[in-house]
Image 1: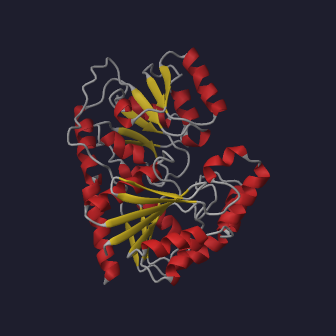
Image 2: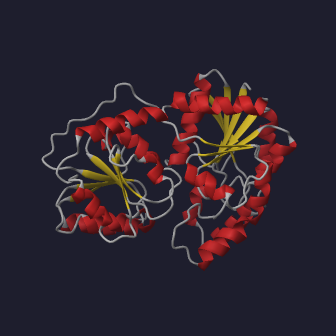
Image 3: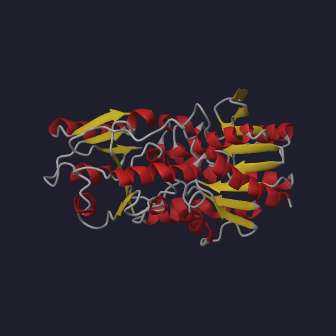
Length: 393
């Protein structure tokens, strides 16, 4: 199989999320292996370019607007947009044109928001081996996330009603890969991918820098950090409360972007509590040289948690919530610790009981750095190539 095609909602330079990073790493790693690699991604106009050996096709897929511009439209139009997307009512002519041009030997679909799952049926008719990589809950809920406290509308309207056609179309997939055991089992237990004869777990990949080493920050006390989207579901309120109590006065550095009203809320805390600082968006290399320990306090079921393995690659251990695939990435007491958001003061007690507020044990740092190597793009790509071989046979 020499020609590979990847589909993802966004691709560089659009989107800064984990799925975009992971898809780009996969595409470029395949290209380094000498394979002919193409990517189709969404845009508000049709054009083509080439980046790091990968042919990229930006395509307008015919919904009411390009997803990246969603903030400009009314709630009613957004709902209609999701109906079109969920039931595959968008125009895929441009996708079909590019597909015929590329004529790939195998196709890897990732996030399919705006493509709609009907592309699976189109691919199936062409008899091209089809692999889907589960990166979120899009197939089960139009918001792409699932929390433990979903209300009726989230669960049955945005969830089941908007997922009827997605469930049916998943039968066209030959191989399904979950980036965590949690995310693949969640879908299989709900009846997805009934005809997939290969079901596997392959984690997200990292482009490791051999020059990375553990930073000696020489802090008097541990500096904790949060990296990611800024909203209630990500557990920001939980860590803000923890670092404004008298339990400890360690510094908390917050990195990320989000709703302007939520950022204002964080800035108010920074004015009242000098130990809390907000930095906005920063590159990983700038973040992890400043913090000693990363906190992932998510209240939703995360599919993976790319920022965790990025932290490991800089020798930064992690404290993460027991949500979704997060615990799978943390070796308790070795690369970090898991806490339980539903239990009062669980985060505070985890920090205090293990004396993480005083300092971070060098063993934790070394173990974190060592674990990051198991996510190298070379190791992950070999796992994909093994699956391609099975599909070919």
